[in-house]
Length: 262
Image 1 (tube, rainbow, N blue to C red):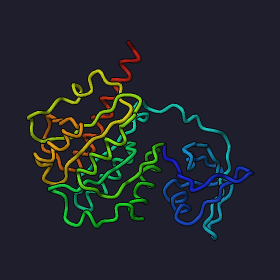
Image 2: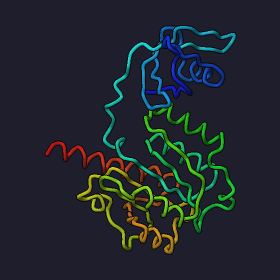
Image 3: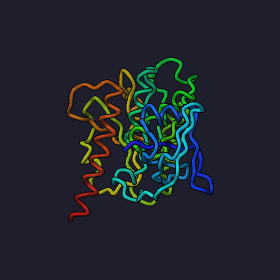
């Protein structure tokens, strides 16, 4: 279900005024009118049902009123996993799509990686620009994702690996990191790589146009990443990212469901 990401909390009377670009989203995307209900997610992550109690077209303002709490405890098993995407910098339009799709899938952190085949100028690009921030917000509102996806600045591969190792230090539970590789040597099927693990934090590394060099694969392996090869067609980098995220989430979800049934 679509949601609205509120910039702040309702006032003491349970009212929240919405204007500016958010007014357009309410009226022209969600097509809300007086009396309609909408899910609103607040900065602390909680979600509430709110009713449209007033619409002022002249001032472009909508007033929402809290009507009932939403049970936000029931999430899919994969939503409980802290999922990271290490995406080697691709062309700008493709990166936009990857960021949008990763956000819709509930990825918590996207790390642009500068590698051998990354696009020139990736180090200078501001990956936390207003445009990409807007893309993430729109994707969360469209998908209803409870995960506050964050996009970091681009870093060289050595820093990306160090960042992942730092995040995993002291983690209570299993962690998993995989890298998608078009070759077959030293690779594992995804389900084999996840065998015996109850994953609480996972990462996926995906190459740019041209893939990932053998030297970079070796560097990722030394940092704890497992090379994964899918028996499928040759995928574009933006397709590979979505395919890999979906496969990893599905594998973790299925594992959780079958463990609960046993």
